[in-house]
Length: 113
Image 1 (cartoon, rainbow, N blue to C red):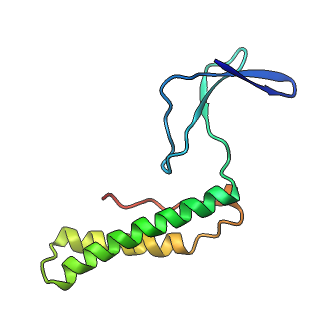
Image 2 (spheres, rainbow, N blue to C red):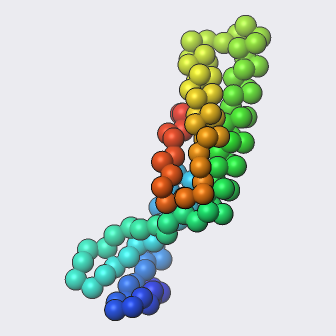
């Protein structure tokens, strides 16, 4: 157990199995005196938001490219066509995100791979 010192309180943090958010950022289990344990994550910084956006754009572009090749070859199934449309929409949505205020970002839902 480690302790986080903040003005007016001491929180203990568990070192057990740690869940992660959709971008792989780890949560901390926080135990406040008199309260049940809870999971929390630090707010995303501007630098983290830029890095996440860049990774998501690379991933989406790779998915779109692969599915477009299948479509261009004439071998696309209905599922492939649906996936291509979903990934294109995701790619556009992520590319339009303003990461200058990371605490106000509403990240689009990633299509199922």
